[in-house]
Image 1 (cartoon, one colour):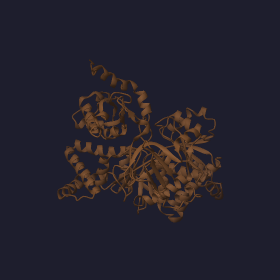
Image 2 (tube, helix red, strand yellow):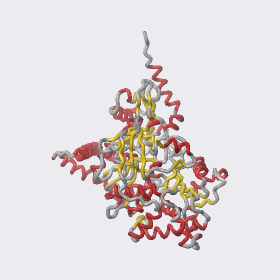
Image 3 (cartoon, rainbow, N blue to C red):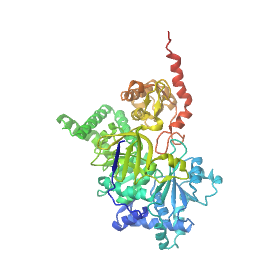
Image 4 (cartoon, rainbow, N blue to C red):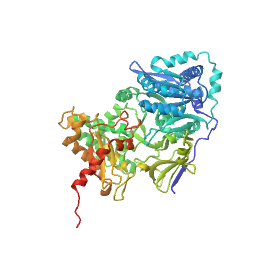
Length: 608
């Protein structure tokens, strides 16, 4: 059994809880700008001490409203400064937050509030309240519903003005490291969401060790970031807590359509993103260049950037001709992309799906090192991550300090350490099934190199076994296809079938530019584009590229472009944009059957 364990580099403090991270930050740098909030087209700083003052005032409001230590409070809101303000106020009040994704349906809201036993709910917008209101009659435990758009935070703060500071100090010290800090429900990509009990120590010990491991990212002078991934997800939630511990100035932009203007004015030093964001940045730049008649230049620049990065990683000498080309393209292409991302971004932390070596090398040559990591809700986000001085493009890095990794006999990744959750809420059977002698079974498959760098090779439950007995990992085909600018999502099919097929959706944001650049009407509907010969040829090219990475038995023989898109709203994507494979296969079963029915009718081979 292959196993790698990295000892913690920060001594454990079992009595500490998350509030201690803020207390220590205020003691160390009270006047450090810990947050910046949008104001009059710019950003207004909020210092560490100012943030703590606001946290305590809001915590008093929760106390005055009757929230008792240990009680659970649901929170449904977008990624804004107020999200982290509420998060820490609940910690200081001794309560337990149950975050709900801002896109959750009424039935999902009902399940999470009902299963968690939440007694109150805070929502951000009228739309959020309307969705809750549909199921309110089935949630008798909910006592109070506060609405931020109606001034709930200011009202709670005013309500708590008579609560003594000593009461907040008493409450914030009740929990120790082993106690529950939050109850985060999984995104539900493989069934009904399960509540993950994450402890204070999960966040405290992981933050302290990760800050040391990522010292060049989070501890440099003026370190800053803009969060746009939903803070209801453990990935951004962990980073927001890590930022407070490390003293990183944090801004927020919940509207991803306004992300580039926000980056331009905020000028962050690092980003937190999923691979789809980097694909969009690359594809948008390529299509813009194509529209300006500079597509050939962009593609040449991209090729040089990728090869340049590969040579650097190998420690090889850069030929003079390439150095000249690189310098030229740096002025013509790379500098413009850096400027579009604010000009100061040095690192990006990427998770939730494989990035791919091509994009990793491309951005590396731009001067932006993408540090891929790996983890799950059950591991408080990261279990592994590449670091500034210990990185290999194409891998998700080595284990973080305080974390152990091993591979089971079938290649499944198992994890133990400071980051592993305590249990599934109200689900002892699922908890027992999730552990193997104290190691958490991730359900993901992987491999290690000799240095302990992990590569994700697939998901155990998603392995396709063809009628011929060939095991196929869908991710190996789906990830490179999804990198094409006009492809929205792709699901590989073929379990117990004679060959591998695929369902493909188009990207409605990228499609108009691609159509215009190829002499086609930019306003073509998804339905018309799905049957257009040029569009089909482009998708075929993406599939052909993916097929070169696998054997013939694993290659995609046939595909269908669907005249629709998969979204969170349609129920086919999770909030972190992962596909809900089981839902898609159920909803599009006729289209899958059609792939094989047609083939059966036309390729029957007579025997005799």
